[in-house]
Amino acid sequence: MQGQEESNLLTLYSDVRATSVRWLWYPYIAIGKITLLQGDPGDGKSTMMMSLISEVSNGGLTPDGKEIGRPQRVIYQCSEDSVADTIKPRLERCGADCRNIAFINEEVCGGLTLDDERIRQAIICFRPRLVVIDPIQAYLGNDSDLLIAGRARKLMQRLGMWASVYDCAVVLIGHLNKKEGSKDLYRSLGSIDVVAAARSVLQVERNMTDSDIRIVHQIKNSLAPVGNDIEFEIRPETGFRWIKCESPLMQPTSSEQLVFQTKTEKAAYLIKKLLSSEDMKAKEMYMRLSDEGISHRTAEDTRKEVGVRCYRKMRQWYWSLKPEEGAQNDGK
Image (cartoon, rainbow, N blue to C red; front, top):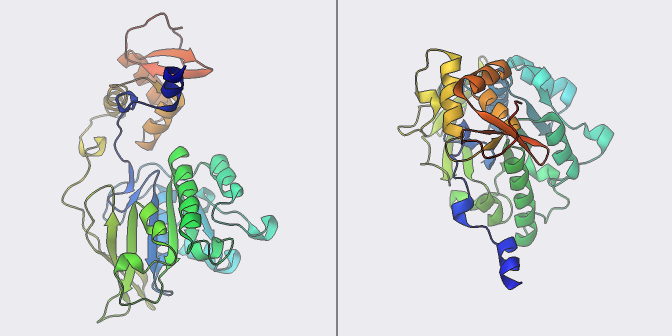
């Protein structure tokens, strides 16, 4: 009996399929993780994020020129500015595709908190690749939520779980505290648990010799080497512009670094790689391939060409490259 209880409680690491971290923008914002973007008020944090949101909504480029892939959906939740006369005009000036960007209307739904169940429901319904909360301080139940270690930890754990389960990058924009003599990691508002839960922390500061130029330092990265400093400018006459964003010397191995002659060739490579260790749900396979710019039709045609076996288990369709062992062989 005791052995049975232990087997239900414990999972062997040998039973876990190792996966690579996926990035919205390497090495600054990871998919399925929390990123903290912090800085003093007025330093351009929101403007910087709107530029990235625009590129994500259009399937454009990261600031260092890497392809994002197909257009992706974004939830941008901002309480500091009016939606109609400030946020939407800013998005339009950035060239964003507003059909791919949504928000929870707080005038209709009432105030939100950081761990509000309605945020989770919105993520399930809209399936965004990126969720931005701006600023984090406006979405607290009370002012002590981030100061009390236990409460801060629970808030961040819940957000981190949503990011992981629903496969989206979560970016929390926050203001710095006034402890200017402290280390950068201790200038975040609230408990150090907030910084501990974030896998990446980006800090925006003004250039000492030209206040229109902002420097973005990555002061924490738990998933990859710390990225190079980034610079952008916000000038009255020219507006927002990236002026320094170099590709890191080391990048994760991915299909993006390989050269494929056709989409089918790329799809075949990805299918074999994803199914190399274990079977995967068909829905997850289609989603992964779609993230790499592979259409549903190309994925299905390539699946048949590669010889992927499909079977049903617990009302879910699975893909497999393993020999059939009595499983129902059909195709979805």
